[in-house]
Image 1 (cartoon, rainbow over the protein chains, first blue to last red):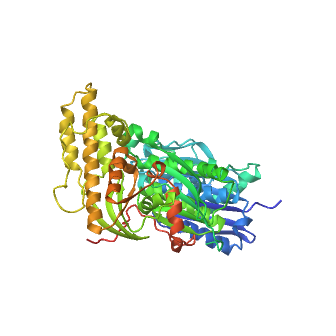
Image 2: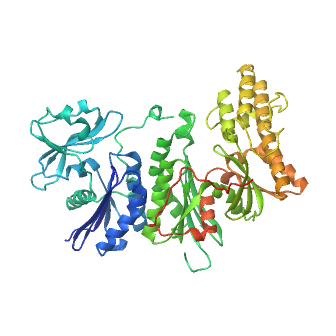
Image 3: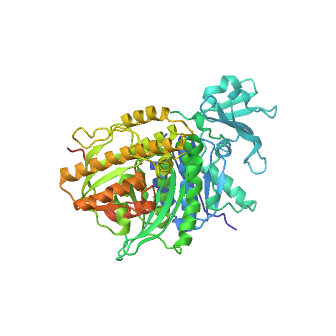
Amino acid sequence: MSDPIVLAIDTATEACSVAVNGVAGVVEECQVAANAHSQLLLPMISRILQRAGLVLGDLDAIACGVGPGGFTGVRIGVSTAQALAMARGLPVYPVSSLQALAAATVQPSVLTALDARKGEVYAAVYVQDERTGLPVLQGEERVCPPGAVAWPHEGGYWGLGSAWPLYHSEWQQNNVLGWTEDAYPQAEAVLRLALARHLRGEDGCRPDQLEPHYIRPFLPQDQQK
Amino acid sequence: MSESATTRILGIESSCDETGLALYDTLQGLLGEVLFSQIDLHAPYGGVVPELASRDHVRRLPLLLEQLMLQTGGQRPDAVAVTAGPGLIGALLVGVNFARALAFAWDIPVIPVHHLEGHLLAPLLNGVVPFPAVALLVSGGHTMLIEVRGLGDYVLLGETLDDAAGEAFDKAAKMLGLGYPGGPALAALAEGGDPEAFRLPRPLLDRPGMDFSFSGLKTAFRLASMKVPEEDMTQRKNLAASFQQAVVDTLFRKCQRALQHTGLKRLIVAGGVGANRALRNALQSLAAEGVELCIADLAHCTDNAAMIALAGALHPEMAQSASADFPVRARWSLVKEEA
């Protein structure tokens, strides 16, 4: 049985990223531009479908990076995925943007960490599954001050994400092998992760069940007047 | 847009604390609409919290679309009209991206709608043709008098220099310890109260022009309210009634002035405060002066998607490809600046 054709998007960070697995392989596009995702996303989807020789009717599912990340960015991706899936009657695979970030490297053990502002980070440790080559979550994804990040095992960590340039000196003591500054959650990784779940027999969810994965609760007293 | 004689427009509204969808047919009128109000969500904070509003819109939109599709027998629209501003930017972005993706997936155009033009055109949902006219746009965020010369041709006659009328209602209600949203609560308290009991100012009535100001009235109200004991229900009712009367008087007199200034004989009243019964009653008396009054029905005074679908239907020239450039604007002027 051939792979289902999946359109994947991730808009949780500065990167606006889309990918689709066409007949001739994965076609993707990514633009790093803060506060422009609403303008960029649909034109990008339109372009990669064309480049892949596909029409919307060819799609079998939508995969969406649901965060954590920028609240507005995540919602742009989620609203778009919900509507595409509803209009075409497709299932949706929600994928953690931290897991997609972790899939950007072949390093066996990764601490993904995105700047969550207010002196906090969205962080999680992922370890590569030897059989599938895909990152598997260790513990949980959380938002916390950089000093409270969990380092569950001894092994050397590779760092990925926008929090690393900010906090690497604080984290250096935890057997850190190195870090990549300009790594982003990519739709191509969201696509791979969704296909793997499909292979395992997961059906994806209904579009109205697709929700942002904020992690950080919103407390109205935090908001700026 | 479709070549057939009739066009169906799906309208989507998410600019503030209401999530709405509606299907409007250019021949048959409104086919169906669904609306979810976030009032209960924001009530504990005494005002709309933008991030909470955005979070709720994104949860609610797919569910509401399902409801609307059930209500209207799954009819596919010919275009999607969506509020592109003004409003809360995060909230707008949810509706706009949802709308554009729907249009993209159905291969139909998308039409950006100015939220205030939606309000202005809302009386048309009842089949009234309201041009040319003077329009009083009065809500929690706006208080404007506009000369409507034709569709899309709007000239500003006057606007508030400080608070919007609805905002003044909400703040006054807060001073009396009434719940959120305060406007309707204050109006309810005013029922049966004596509107002459307290002498409150009618700001800017003594000066020419059609601008409004409500901050002086608000201050006078606060001072008066400090002398009213909380348990004196009669005085509280009288104070609420006096306040409401002062706002209504001000709005009424400025409308009169705008009608005289333009020589027009038609008045459109739109926006949430248009649902206020005292205001509606006062404006009815203009009929004696030969003025035709066009007020949206109560459900369509406040934010809704039916008015957005209608505005989209009236602006087919704005239809564009879903993947074209589509600005979303927190601030967006409706009018040409002109004296």
